[in-house]
Image (cartoon, rainbow, N blue to C red; front, side, top):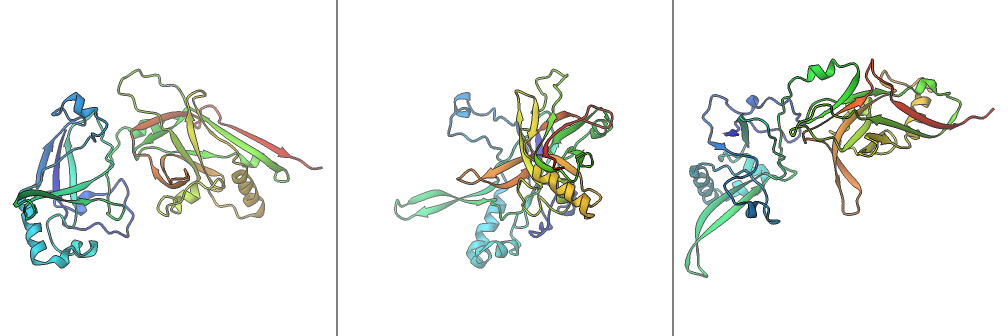
Length: 331
C-alpha cells in the first residue's frame, strides 16, 4: 500500500463535529508536494516472525518525516518556549505540523488497518552531563482525546444493497444501518405491557471467500429521533429506555433485544396522548463498539469502524421480524 503525508494549512475546529464524509481538501493543499511518502504492508514483513508474534510487539506503521521539520521545532523551542506551554499555544505557534497532518492512502486494496494510537516522535541528540557523552533522546506528541482526529471513508456499490427489498443490511464502517418500524399500533393501548422482545435473524453467508467481512458483534437499537438529535455527538450510551444493545449470538445466528417493554410502552403512550412525532415508532440498528470503566459499566459508544457486514431478515418484500409481547389485560 502507498500513502502520502501532507501538512494541514487549516486547523480542524475542536468544537465542531466531523463525520466520515469530511472533505480533506478543505484543510490541505492537494497541489502541494507531500512532506513524506510511505510504501507499507499491514503486517510488517521487514521483521522476523518470532519478533512479530512476541507479546510485547505492537504492529505499527512508521512514516519518517523530514529532519528539517524536527530542526525547526527544536529551534523554535529554544527561541520561543512559550509556544510549547500548552495545546493552544502550540496550535498558534506556526510550527511545522502544528495545524495537523493528513495521511492520504493513494494505492492499495484488500486490507484495512485499525489504528488505535497515533503519535509523532521527535528524535534528537543531546549531551548527557552525567555520563559525559552524546545521547539520543525522544519526545513524543501523542494524539489523546483532546486532539481532533477525523477519518474519511468511501464505500462503493452500496446502492445494490439498498435496492434489495428482500432483506436489510448492516455494513461498517460508514456504510448501512437498518431502519425498523415497531408495530406498536397492533398493541392495545389499554393493556399493560409486562415484557417485550424483538429478534433480528441474520442470513447465513452464501459466498465462500477467505476475504469475507466479519459479523458485527454489537449493535445498538436507538430511536430514530434520538439518533437525529445527536445521540453520538452528545456522547449518549444505551439507557434501556430508548436505546438498547444486543450482541451477536452465533448459536441462534441472531441479535436479540430483551425486555424492550419500556420503549414499547413509551411509544404506545405517545401515540395515545397525541405527542407522537413522524418517527415515533422507528428505530435504527447500528454496529457499535463500547468503552467500559474498571467496573464494567459502558461509558462510551462509538460507531464500529471495523470491516463488518450482516444481511438480516426483513425488508419491504422479505420475511417479517418477530416481536414478542407479554401483557396484562384488565376487563
